[in-house]
View 1: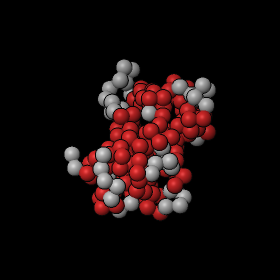
View 2 (view 1 turned 90 degrees about the vertical axis):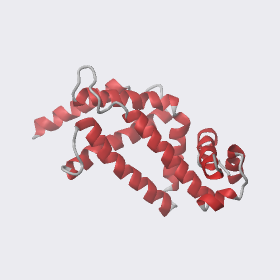
View 3 (view 1 turned 30 degrees about the horizontal axis):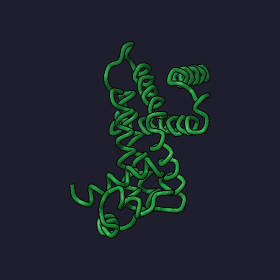
Length: 193
């Protein structure tokens, strides 16, 4: 493994152990067992390395919570796929808490960094269509507006659920409660049309 890969692994470890805001270049170099100057050589800056590590880690997390969403589930159908995905999201709220805290810190950085904002916006846009396809079979290429809308609702729910689990895990909703709430909202919206 070269310095570039070592730095990425070290940055991911630092994000988990120290968080986005508290990680220094020296922390990353030490975790990577790499010379300090290699950060700028390979990534341009500590911030770019942390951004890349965070985005890669969030992509891995997204894949983990989405895994199996397109597969048939007992009682299959969209409802079962959605509830199964929400169960993985809720489980990850405890197993991946340090990553979720680091991602919340990174979101705050987006206000002051156009680069972070752009990278996160692109990642969000990819996730929208992927969620719509995996959970509901809605193809972005064919039904772009609907796929974007459905994916955006799931993204909003993931963000809100994560905030609730970070702040008040004892009273944060379960996967079943999320699914029940979504069904009730859908019924109310249908009755209004």
